[in-house]
Length: 172
Image 1 (tube, rainbow, N blue to C red):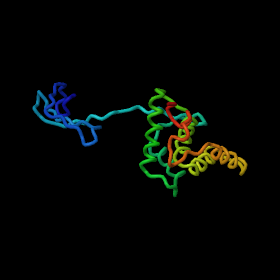
Image 2: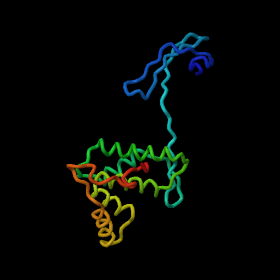
Image 3: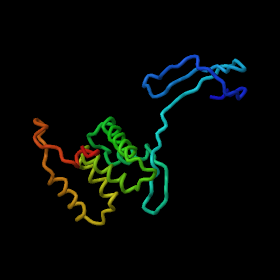
């Protein structure tokens, strides 16, 4: 690390501390040449893939936009913010695990629909109507039949219906 005062590359770390969450490391440094002290912060820098839109334009992945679209579909539904954040985190983890530099927006839409289907069926239908650009009521009816045809799990016995491959975002 170069000294910000004299640009000498020889610095020593005098103190290292992690923040409460453990995702940032704070280091106090001292320049060997000018003896001035300064602080650096070390953070994880994950490279999210760029999003390729339907029209071919490319844009950076936006966590806030993804969370916002899910919150819009889940508006006035009985789903906690923690559940929404966890779903967004699972989508991001899936995108990172793909290892791609670019991902089509359609792939993200499908991941969002899988998560919404698990969280809330009404929100899933809301999102699907916009994402798939429903033209008439028949398309709504088709998606509603699809959601209703899935076997319901008993609340008293969660193991009553085995999970399908579609239930797990990672295919487990």
